Length: 389
Image 1 (cartoon, rainbow, N blue to C red):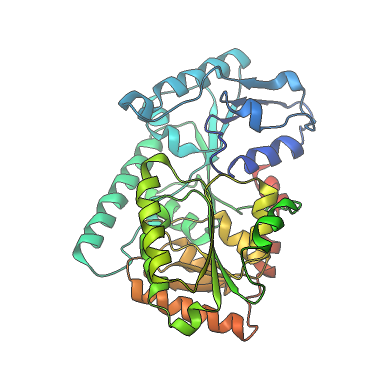
Image 2: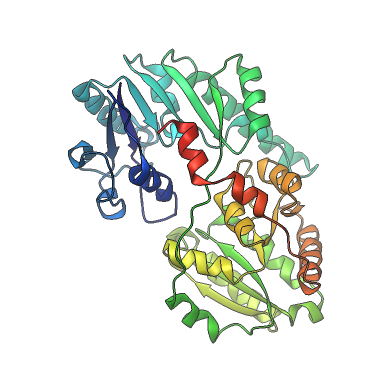
Protein backbone atom coordinates (compact mmCIF):
# COMPACT_ATOMS: atom_id res chain seq x y z
CA UNK A 1 0.00 0.00 0.00
CA UNK A 2 1.24 3.49 -0.85
CA UNK A 3 -0.03 6.10 1.63
CA UNK A 4 0.23 9.89 1.40
CA UNK A 5 -0.20 11.79 4.69
CA UNK A 6 -1.05 15.40 3.93
CA UNK A 7 -1.22 18.64 5.90
CA UNK A 8 -1.23 21.89 3.90
CA UNK A 9 -2.20 24.11 6.84
CA UNK A 10 0.91 24.04 9.04
CA UNK A 11 1.76 27.42 10.54
CA UNK A 12 3.34 29.03 13.58
CA UNK A 13 -0.01 30.46 14.72
CA UNK A 14 -1.08 27.49 16.83
CA UNK A 15 0.00 24.18 18.31
CA UNK A 16 -1.77 21.91 15.81
CA UNK A 17 1.56 21.03 14.21
CA UNK A 18 2.13 18.80 17.25
CA UNK A 19 -0.18 16.19 15.69
CA UNK A 20 1.80 15.82 12.49
CA UNK A 21 5.15 16.15 14.28
CA UNK A 22 4.26 13.20 16.50
CA UNK A 23 3.26 11.14 13.47
CA UNK A 24 6.48 12.07 11.66
CA UNK A 25 8.56 11.05 14.68
CA UNK A 26 6.72 7.82 15.49
CA UNK A 27 5.19 6.45 12.29
CA UNK A 28 5.91 2.77 11.80
CA UNK A 29 6.06 1.73 8.15
CA UNK A 30 4.76 -1.81 7.81
CA UNK A 31 6.17 -4.41 5.44
CA UNK A 32 5.31 -3.78 1.78
CA UNK A 33 3.99 -0.30 2.65
CA UNK A 34 5.37 2.99 1.42
CA UNK A 35 4.58 6.22 3.30
CA UNK A 36 4.97 9.75 1.95
CA UNK A 37 4.27 13.15 3.51
CA UNK A 38 3.07 16.32 1.77
CA UNK A 39 3.24 19.69 3.53
CA UNK A 40 2.88 23.37 2.70
CA UNK A 41 5.86 25.69 2.35
CA UNK A 42 5.93 26.99 5.96
CA UNK A 43 6.26 23.45 7.26
CA UNK A 44 9.94 23.44 6.25
CA UNK A 45 10.71 25.64 9.26
CA UNK A 46 8.23 24.02 11.65
CA UNK A 47 8.30 20.25 11.10
CA UNK A 48 11.52 18.45 12.01
CA UNK A 49 11.97 15.31 9.89
CA UNK A 50 15.43 14.44 11.22
CA UNK A 51 14.18 11.82 13.71
CA UNK A 52 11.71 10.10 11.41
CA UNK A 53 12.18 6.48 10.37
CA UNK A 54 10.65 7.38 7.01
CA UNK A 55 13.13 7.99 4.19
CA UNK A 56 13.72 11.74 4.06
CA UNK A 57 13.24 11.65 0.29
CA UNK A 58 9.61 10.72 1.00
CA UNK A 59 8.85 14.20 2.39
CA UNK A 60 7.50 16.76 -0.06
CA UNK A 61 6.97 20.46 0.55
CA UNK A 62 4.83 22.63 -1.68
CA UNK A 63 6.32 25.87 -2.95
CA UNK A 64 3.33 27.72 -1.54
CA UNK A 65 1.25 28.41 1.53
CA UNK A 66 -2.48 28.57 1.00
CA UNK A 67 -4.91 31.26 2.12
CA UNK A 68 -8.67 31.64 2.29
CA UNK A 69 -9.21 35.21 1.11
CA UNK A 70 -10.80 34.60 -2.31
CA UNK A 71 -13.62 32.23 -3.29
CA UNK A 72 -11.21 29.89 -5.06
CA UNK A 73 -8.93 29.86 -2.01
CA UNK A 74 -11.86 29.05 0.29
CA UNK A 75 -12.92 26.25 -2.02
CA UNK A 76 -9.32 24.91 -1.90
CA UNK A 77 -9.15 24.42 -5.68
CA UNK A 78 -5.40 25.09 -5.93
CA UNK A 79 -4.60 23.08 -2.79
CA UNK A 80 -6.47 20.05 -4.11
CA UNK A 81 -4.68 20.23 -7.44
CA UNK A 82 -1.37 20.01 -5.56
CA UNK A 83 -2.61 16.93 -3.70
CA UNK A 84 -3.84 15.30 -6.92
CA UNK A 85 -0.52 15.99 -8.61
CA UNK A 86 1.45 14.13 -5.93
CA UNK A 87 -1.19 11.42 -5.62
CA UNK A 88 -0.84 10.69 -9.34
CA UNK A 89 2.95 11.00 -9.33
CA UNK A 90 3.37 8.62 -6.37
CA UNK A 91 0.57 6.26 -7.50
CA UNK A 92 -0.93 6.26 -4.01
CA UNK A 93 -3.62 3.87 -2.79
CA UNK A 94 -4.65 5.96 0.24
CA UNK A 95 -4.67 9.66 1.11
CA UNK A 96 -4.80 10.68 4.77
CA UNK A 97 -5.79 14.31 5.42
CA UNK A 98 -4.99 15.90 8.78
CA UNK A 99 -7.93 18.28 8.22
CA UNK A 100 -10.70 16.90 6.02
CA UNK A 101 -12.88 20.00 6.55
CA UNK A 102 -10.66 22.02 4.24
CA UNK A 103 -11.46 19.74 1.30
CA UNK A 104 -15.12 18.72 1.77
CA UNK A 105 -16.22 20.41 -1.45
CA UNK A 106 -13.29 19.18 -3.54
CA UNK A 107 -13.64 15.59 -2.34
CA UNK A 108 -17.40 15.56 -2.91
CA UNK A 109 -17.20 16.91 -6.44
CA UNK A 110 -14.37 14.72 -7.77
CA UNK A 111 -13.83 11.05 -8.44
CA UNK A 112 -10.37 9.78 -7.49
CA UNK A 113 -8.68 6.35 -7.84
CA UNK A 114 -7.53 6.15 -4.19
CA UNK A 115 -9.11 5.83 -0.74
CA UNK A 116 -9.47 8.93 1.44
CA UNK A 117 -9.33 9.06 5.25
CA UNK A 118 -8.66 11.85 7.72
CA UNK A 119 -9.71 13.87 10.75
CA UNK A 120 -13.01 15.73 10.52
CA UNK A 121 -13.20 18.68 12.90
CA UNK A 122 -16.34 20.52 14.04
CA UNK A 123 -19.04 18.08 12.79
CA UNK A 124 -22.70 19.09 12.68
CA UNK A 125 -24.30 16.90 15.34
CA UNK A 126 -23.06 18.88 18.38
CA UNK A 127 -24.20 22.31 17.23
CA UNK A 128 -26.85 23.76 19.55
CA UNK A 129 -27.75 27.11 21.06
CA UNK A 130 -26.19 27.77 24.48
CA UNK A 131 -29.25 29.76 25.63
CA UNK A 132 -32.92 30.21 24.75
CA UNK A 133 -32.61 33.51 22.89
CA UNK A 134 -34.21 33.39 19.43
CA UNK A 135 -31.17 34.94 17.74
CA UNK A 136 -28.85 32.31 19.22
CA UNK A 137 -31.15 29.45 18.25
CA UNK A 138 -31.46 30.73 14.70
CA UNK A 139 -27.70 31.20 14.36
CA UNK A 140 -27.09 27.68 15.62
CA UNK A 141 -29.65 26.15 13.24
CA UNK A 142 -28.11 27.90 10.23
CA UNK A 143 -24.64 26.71 11.21
CA UNK A 144 -25.91 23.17 11.85
CA UNK A 145 -27.61 22.85 8.46
CA UNK A 146 -24.60 24.32 6.68
CA UNK A 147 -22.30 21.77 8.33
CA UNK A 148 -24.76 18.96 7.60
CA UNK A 149 -24.85 19.93 3.93
CA UNK A 150 -21.04 19.95 3.70
CA UNK A 151 -20.84 16.53 5.37
CA UNK A 152 -23.47 15.14 3.01
CA UNK A 153 -21.65 16.58 0.01
CA UNK A 154 -18.37 15.08 1.23
CA UNK A 155 -20.00 11.67 1.60
CA UNK A 156 -21.00 11.68 -2.07
CA UNK A 157 -17.47 10.43 -2.67
CA UNK A 158 -17.22 6.65 -2.88
CA UNK A 159 -13.51 6.99 -1.95
CA UNK A 160 -14.18 7.93 1.68
CA UNK A 161 -12.94 5.17 3.97
CA UNK A 162 -12.56 6.60 7.50
CA UNK A 163 -13.52 9.96 8.97
CA UNK A 164 -12.10 10.29 12.47
CA UNK A 165 -13.89 12.40 15.11
CA UNK A 166 -11.89 13.58 18.13
CA UNK A 167 -12.96 12.49 21.62
CA UNK A 168 -16.58 11.77 20.70
CA UNK A 169 -17.71 8.13 20.88
CA UNK A 170 -21.39 9.03 21.11
CA UNK A 171 -20.98 11.49 18.26
CA UNK A 172 -19.53 8.81 16.01
CA UNK A 173 -22.66 6.68 16.49
CA UNK A 174 -24.87 9.71 15.93
CA UNK A 175 -23.13 10.76 12.70
CA UNK A 176 -23.14 7.23 11.29
CA UNK A 177 -26.87 7.02 12.04
CA UNK A 178 -27.67 10.47 10.63
CA UNK A 179 -25.76 9.90 7.39
CA UNK A 180 -26.56 6.15 7.17
CA UNK A 181 -22.93 5.14 6.85
CA UNK A 182 -20.12 3.45 8.80
CA UNK A 183 -17.20 5.72 7.90
CA UNK A 184 -17.17 7.82 11.08
CA UNK A 185 -14.69 6.50 13.65
CA UNK A 186 -13.55 7.55 17.14
CA UNK A 187 -10.09 9.10 17.63
CA UNK A 188 -8.66 10.12 21.02
CA UNK A 189 -7.27 13.66 21.01
CA UNK A 190 -3.68 13.11 22.22
CA UNK A 191 -2.13 15.01 25.13
CA UNK A 192 1.52 15.53 24.27
CA UNK A 193 4.19 16.04 26.91
CA UNK A 194 6.84 18.74 26.62
CA UNK A 195 9.75 19.79 28.78
CA UNK A 196 8.88 22.99 30.64
CA UNK A 197 10.65 26.18 29.62
CA UNK A 198 12.80 27.79 32.30
CA UNK A 199 12.80 31.25 30.74
CA UNK A 200 9.02 31.53 31.16
CA UNK A 201 9.34 31.48 34.94
CA UNK A 202 11.44 34.64 34.85
CA UNK A 203 8.54 36.52 33.24
CA UNK A 204 5.93 35.29 35.68
CA UNK A 205 7.87 35.27 38.96
CA UNK A 206 7.97 39.05 39.28
CA UNK A 207 4.43 39.61 37.96
CA UNK A 208 2.24 37.24 39.99
CA UNK A 209 2.17 36.81 43.73
CA UNK A 210 2.65 33.25 44.93
CA UNK A 211 -0.61 33.05 46.84
CA UNK A 212 -2.82 34.09 43.90
CA UNK A 213 -5.37 31.81 42.21
CA UNK A 214 -4.32 31.88 38.57
CA UNK A 215 -6.80 31.95 35.68
CA UNK A 216 -5.45 31.17 32.21
CA UNK A 217 -6.65 32.16 28.73
CA UNK A 218 -4.37 30.42 26.24
CA UNK A 219 -4.15 30.30 22.44
CA UNK A 220 -4.88 32.73 19.65
CA UNK A 221 -6.74 35.64 21.26
CA UNK A 222 -9.65 36.17 18.87
CA UNK A 223 -13.41 36.75 19.27
CA UNK A 224 -13.91 32.95 19.31
CA UNK A 225 -12.24 32.93 22.73
CA UNK A 226 -15.19 35.01 24.02
CA UNK A 227 -12.74 37.55 25.48
CA UNK A 228 -15.26 40.35 25.96
CA UNK A 229 -17.70 38.34 28.08
CA UNK A 230 -14.94 36.63 30.05
CA UNK A 231 -13.27 39.91 30.99
CA UNK A 232 -16.62 41.44 31.99
CA UNK A 233 -17.29 38.39 34.18
CA UNK A 234 -14.24 39.16 36.31
CA UNK A 235 -15.71 42.59 37.03
CA UNK A 236 -18.77 41.01 38.67
CA UNK A 237 -16.68 39.04 41.15
CA UNK A 238 -16.68 40.10 44.78
CA UNK A 239 -13.82 42.50 45.55
CA UNK A 240 -12.44 40.13 48.17
CA UNK A 241 -12.13 37.44 45.49
CA UNK A 242 -10.50 39.85 43.04
CA UNK A 243 -7.71 40.49 45.56
CA UNK A 244 -6.87 36.78 45.54
CA UNK A 245 -6.67 36.13 41.79
CA UNK A 246 -4.43 36.67 38.78
CA UNK A 247 -5.16 36.38 35.07
CA UNK A 248 -2.72 35.12 32.45
CA UNK A 249 -3.55 35.84 28.81
CA UNK A 250 -1.09 34.04 26.57
CA UNK A 251 -1.31 34.03 22.79
CA UNK A 252 -1.03 35.86 19.52
CA UNK A 253 -3.64 38.56 18.88
CA UNK A 254 -4.72 38.72 15.20
CA UNK A 255 -4.24 42.08 13.52
CA UNK A 256 -7.99 42.66 13.05
CA UNK A 257 -8.62 42.20 16.79
CA UNK A 258 -5.70 44.18 18.29
CA UNK A 259 -7.49 47.52 18.75
CA UNK A 260 -10.58 45.87 20.24
CA UNK A 261 -8.47 43.73 22.55
CA UNK A 262 -6.45 46.71 23.77
CA UNK A 263 -9.65 48.61 24.56
CA UNK A 264 -11.05 45.63 26.46
CA UNK A 265 -7.85 45.35 28.51
CA UNK A 266 -7.82 49.06 29.25
CA UNK A 267 -11.36 48.83 30.60
CA UNK A 268 -10.51 45.65 32.54
CA UNK A 269 -7.53 47.17 34.35
CA UNK A 270 -9.54 50.29 35.20
CA UNK A 271 -12.43 48.34 36.69
CA UNK A 272 -10.37 45.57 38.30
CA UNK A 273 -7.22 47.14 39.79
CA UNK A 274 -6.82 44.36 42.37
CA UNK A 275 -6.53 41.56 39.81
CA UNK A 276 -2.94 40.86 38.80
CA UNK A 277 -2.72 40.69 35.03
CA UNK A 278 -0.01 39.28 32.76
CA UNK A 279 -0.37 39.42 28.98
CA UNK A 280 1.98 37.86 26.44
CA UNK A 281 0.70 38.82 22.98
CA UNK A 282 2.70 36.34 20.93
CA UNK A 283 2.80 32.71 19.92
CA UNK A 284 4.75 30.72 22.52
CA UNK A 285 6.62 27.45 22.22
CA UNK A 286 5.30 24.08 23.39
CA UNK A 287 7.69 24.14 26.34
CA UNK A 288 6.48 27.60 27.38
CA UNK A 289 2.87 26.45 27.04
CA UNK A 290 3.65 23.53 29.35
CA UNK A 291 5.02 25.90 31.98
CA UNK A 292 2.04 28.27 31.90
CA UNK A 293 -0.41 25.43 32.44
CA UNK A 294 1.70 24.00 35.25
CA UNK A 295 1.43 27.23 37.30
CA UNK A 296 -2.26 27.92 36.63
CA UNK A 297 -5.35 26.81 38.53
CA UNK A 298 -8.34 27.51 36.27
CA UNK A 299 -8.45 27.22 32.47
CA UNK A 300 -10.96 29.45 30.66
CA UNK A 301 -12.28 27.57 27.61
CA UNK A 302 -15.68 29.28 27.42
CA UNK A 303 -15.64 29.58 23.63
CA UNK A 304 -18.50 31.21 21.76
CA UNK A 305 -20.20 29.20 18.99
CA UNK A 306 -17.81 26.29 19.46
CA UNK A 307 -19.10 22.74 19.67
CA UNK A 308 -16.18 20.32 19.28
CA UNK A 309 -13.25 19.23 21.40
CA UNK A 310 -10.18 21.25 22.35
CA UNK A 311 -6.70 19.97 23.13
CA UNK A 312 -6.50 22.55 25.90
CA UNK A 313 -8.95 20.66 28.09
CA UNK A 314 -6.49 17.77 28.06
CA UNK A 315 -3.59 20.09 28.84
CA UNK A 316 -5.55 21.39 31.85
CA UNK A 317 -6.50 17.85 32.94
CA UNK A 318 -2.84 16.88 32.97
CA UNK A 319 -2.23 19.47 35.72
CA UNK A 320 -5.56 18.90 37.51
CA UNK A 321 -6.69 22.40 36.59
CA UNK A 322 -10.37 23.27 36.77
CA UNK A 323 -11.77 24.03 33.29
CA UNK A 324 -14.67 26.37 32.61
CA UNK A 325 -16.28 25.37 29.30
CA UNK A 326 -19.38 26.18 27.21
CA UNK A 327 -22.62 24.57 28.33
CA UNK A 328 -23.27 23.01 24.91
CA UNK A 329 -21.20 20.81 22.65
CA UNK A 330 -18.55 18.18 23.26
CA UNK A 331 -16.51 20.20 25.77
CA UNK A 332 -19.53 20.37 28.04
CA UNK A 333 -20.05 16.61 27.81
CA UNK A 334 -16.39 15.79 28.42
CA UNK A 335 -16.29 18.19 31.35
CA UNK A 336 -19.28 16.44 32.96
CA UNK A 337 -18.21 12.89 32.09
CA UNK A 338 -14.68 13.23 33.52
CA UNK A 339 -15.54 15.85 36.19
CA UNK A 340 -13.04 18.34 34.76
CA UNK A 341 -14.74 21.55 35.87
CA UNK A 342 -17.90 23.56 35.22
CA UNK A 343 -19.95 24.35 32.10
CA UNK A 344 -21.45 27.82 31.73
CA UNK A 345 -23.42 29.86 29.22
CA UNK A 346 -20.80 31.68 27.11
CA UNK A 347 -23.24 34.55 26.51
CA UNK A 348 -24.16 35.08 30.18
CA UNK A 349 -21.65 37.24 32.01
CA UNK A 350 -23.43 36.47 35.28
CA UNK A 351 -23.26 32.70 34.78
CA UNK A 352 -19.57 32.84 33.88
CA UNK A 353 -18.83 34.99 36.92
CA UNK A 354 -20.74 32.65 39.23
CA UNK A 355 -18.79 29.62 37.96
CA UNK A 356 -15.53 31.57 38.37
CA UNK A 357 -16.44 32.17 42.01
CA UNK A 358 -17.24 28.48 42.53
CA UNK A 359 -13.92 27.47 40.96
CA UNK A 360 -12.04 29.99 43.12
CA UNK A 361 -13.69 28.59 46.23
CA UNK A 362 -12.64 25.07 45.18
CA UNK A 363 -9.01 26.12 44.76
CA UNK A 364 -9.06 28.04 48.05
CA UNK A 365 -10.16 24.81 49.76
CA UNK A 366 -7.51 22.77 47.89
CA UNK A 367 -10.22 20.98 45.87
CA UNK A 368 -8.64 20.46 42.46
CA UNK A 369 -10.10 18.14 39.84
CA UNK A 370 -8.57 14.72 39.17
CA UNK A 371 -7.65 14.70 35.48
CA UNK A 372 -5.57 11.52 35.60
CA UNK A 373 -8.14 9.27 33.88
CA UNK A 374 -8.64 11.73 31.01
CA UNK A 375 -4.87 12.19 30.70
CA UNK A 376 -4.23 8.44 30.62
CA UNK A 377 -7.01 7.69 28.12
CA UNK A 378 -5.64 10.31 25.73
CA UNK A 379 -2.09 9.06 25.47
CA UNK A 380 -0.47 9.77 22.07
CA UNK A 381 0.19 6.05 21.60
CA UNK A 382 -3.58 5.41 21.43
CA UNK A 383 -3.85 8.17 18.82
CA UNK A 384 -1.22 6.48 16.65
CA UNK A 385 -2.67 2.99 17.16
CA UNK A 386 -6.17 4.02 16.10
CA UNK A 387 -4.80 5.64 12.95
CA UNK A 388 -2.82 2.47 12.26
CA UNK A 389 0.35 4.48 11.71
